[in-house]
Image (cartoon, rainbow, N blue to C red):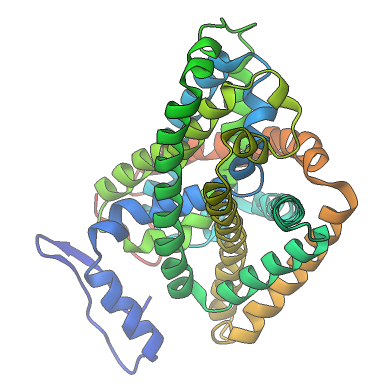
Length: 404
């Protein structure tokens, strides 16, 4: 870090010693005067950005994990997942701030010790799966909307993700500001239209009692594998000024990430049970709505959501590589280096998308990774992580301890 932060009533201040690279001075100034958006909303929006892409934005994840117990059971499961997200994000953000751990390697070393490499292996594999789901979804959207071969939509998504991540955190934040505003606007409009056109079907669906208590398993599994999204937030935790900021930002992450899903799920429930088997539930609902202008707007929003997800997970890996390069004295991660990492990951995942397709990737891949992430991410954070937060003296690092 370019300087030492100390919290005061007026905010964080920095003392810069010796010659500093321009990037480090700019970073210090940004941290010294974080905005309300950067402190409380950006972490949750970044978390949402990774959660929403691929299956969630298209409705495929929602159908896979929440419709098996019926619309009302699915709604219970989503509320459970939202509460779990808020709880674990609050702990993860607070621990990251406490340890000044702004990349996943540093954070996972603090809770897994030498076994952090196990997390990295599974993170990279899961990253490829997420990108494959996104690529498959982009191909499906292009085919449904414009009649393109699936590979065209996949290639367009790859280009957008690679271009954005090559500019680092600042470029990512600018993209998230624009795409998130557009996304919430579209879902708000979708809610109004769904209530206007489908209110009777939604009301009838929500009177169906849950077929079992399996909604608890569905909600917990969905929450668990999506916690990998918290890793994408770490580069932006440096904006926080206190542990209170971290806890509030974590608590808001759940509702910020789940609100669009709740809107979408309610609209989908009007067509239960036939919509549960649709490859693109979003397209199913939009066809029933019969508004071409909104269909185009919604599909464009989905594409933006897919870009958000790809940018979030790839940027987290880039930040981990940059920290490793700086710690080894090799300098900063270059523009071309970031572009190269994104290109390789996207090519591998694009091949998987074309080979397996959207439905199979979500059904066979996400469920297994849910249990894996529960074991190597959620449980360590909620045990060792909480212990480190409760014992400040044990949690000190060479970078200095955080103010609480």
